[in-house]
Length: 339
Image 1: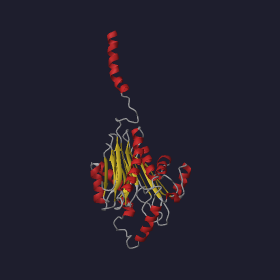
Image 2: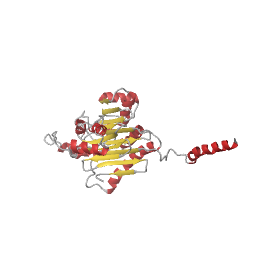
Image 3: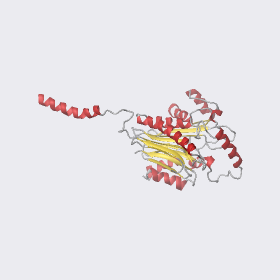
Image 4: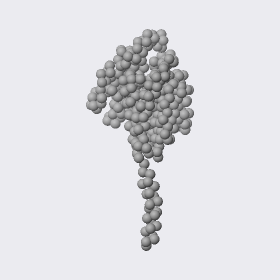
């Protein structure tokens, strides 16, 4: 009997000892497979940008990526990571979302955002909000607190009041740089050169977004923007529209887009990438290349995405894209322009 008890004691210890000896700190758990990718808009830095200016932009992307990475590395959800990442970008005046949003043709700011849960295909978006400090947070509340997908204008503002989200005056989104850009664009956009069939121009693109895969295998995606400089008041682009600028499905991928919103809407670009993966069994890279390079026009914009295995992809037909990625293997990668 003593020998039998000894045998089971040794057997039991062989299972529990390694666990107790190497109990993982949740802050550094290397066994959890997660990944995150973000963008700060399609486009390249100005040719005369200084090294200091470029570094400031890198630092902004890095701060946002760190916020999302920290959520995932401590076992947080992909939805929490996406919201945390985009909130940092919305609060950074360098990016066209939240503080730092571009001016519309009336000299004001109208903000759009959306978020999607790849586990349930639930999504939420807001369009044309004017006083919401972090539109991505309100978009998530639309998803979780209403039966709807998209709220716009005064209705979205009323909902923001009901949800007690942070509010600011509309001019809190203004920066002198954006005002100067707006003055220049007003002079360029005449009736003749603003025709519908004109190729994309630098001031028409600029958005922020994030896609994340958490340790539970759930994908989430989100996008936020101030739109295009000198846009018609009331204009809504692809960023708040599920399937156009944002899409997430655990079975395939998550996508966030940046570019000429009208084109991404016309082609249901984000959803189309997912559907190509599902029905043609293409890889994320193949599907994204096809949609960006074959369906959309050259220069229309770019996407970031990741598939259910955590493989990160970014594709753009603009001169560059502000972007970055991190994952549980230790990757932490920030890129600007066509790097």
